[in-house]
Length: 259
Image 1 (cartoon, rainbow, N blue to C red):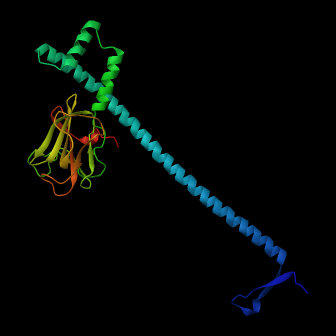
Image 2: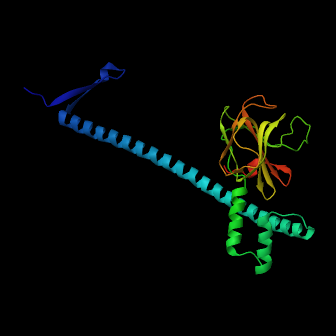
Image 3: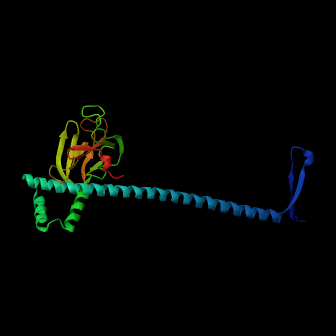
């Protein structure tokens, strides 16, 4: 005869209190089904919740990046505005002192005198040129092994007018902004180096390279490869030494480089 129940025996520490329970098979099956459904629901919940947490974390990171870029854009806009004023003052001083100017600067002054001021197109073109001249592009991507420090003054062991970026030998070194190559060659300290003039009083220097791929007087664009990193000059390991010079004064490159 087929039985439709089974017995569950519970044996506590006291054998005299042993309990027997008859459980119908259908109830066991129902409980097993509910337990299975509960387990599946728990797995689905944990998986979904984990994905939501990941998405929330990604959204928070993106929001932080957007906020940082917004701040950077405001800083760049302020720099552009200041550079524009300095450039205009520089042109006026050159004109007053009778100093030789580039042909495009002379034409700009002539148009300004004729029209009473720069046109909107000229202003926009000037701003775009300034943006291309701001060294905000990382020449290489690597860890900063030595930070900028000019507080101690030249000659001190801690004096460092730029930042060192640790990278493997042969890593492409790219121009931080558009400009022309003012110098490219050998230096006992910097090894094979490149110095780029971006205009508006801004220059950048790239030192300790293994080899150079640009020449003096050559025009370069932002992100263009100008050298390959190395360990030349006074250097103890492969890295790139990067400097930003504003009006002949070294400044912290991290003030310009976008994160």
